[in-house]
Amino acid sequence: MAAIHITDIESAINYWRQQKPSIDGYSLSPELRALAEVYGVMVFGRHSAVNEASLPDAATAAWLAWYGTTPDTPCIAICSTSQGDEVCKGCGRTFAEVQYWTEMGPAEKRATWHRITAEGSSWRFNKYAERAAEKQKAPAGA
Image 1 (cartoon, rainbow, N blue to C red):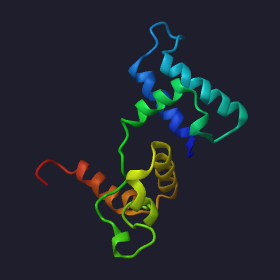
Image 2: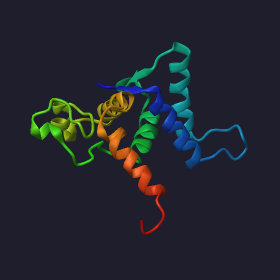
Image 3: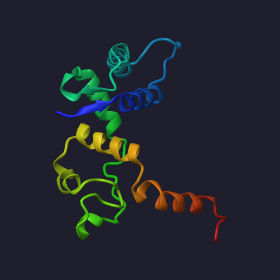
Image 4: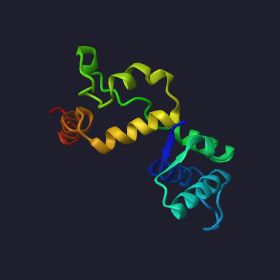
């Protein structure tokens, strides 16, 4: 089983805070409560990740609902593993990760996302990200 990084738990908490805000300023929705309990244990124990199998059912369901709102694949349609590279220059995944992506579970996929984001060395996070930002800044018709 894969581990879920604390930043994913935080993101899921923030997602549920937006989906079901507290009406009185202190009560929590069931989804938020389930994730907050996991988060509290992680923070208290100084753990940066939690085993997917150890999550209570309610926390798993809330995390999976958040996960469903995230992009599935980091692919940017420039795959250098098809040219023989062990690590894709486009997305940063290894050949094995690209090959078995459809067989991976949500926690495994998020662990890969976390790694490639932390590394930040693939084109997804530099050349093409910069170009996309430039296009957003450009005036209409440019």
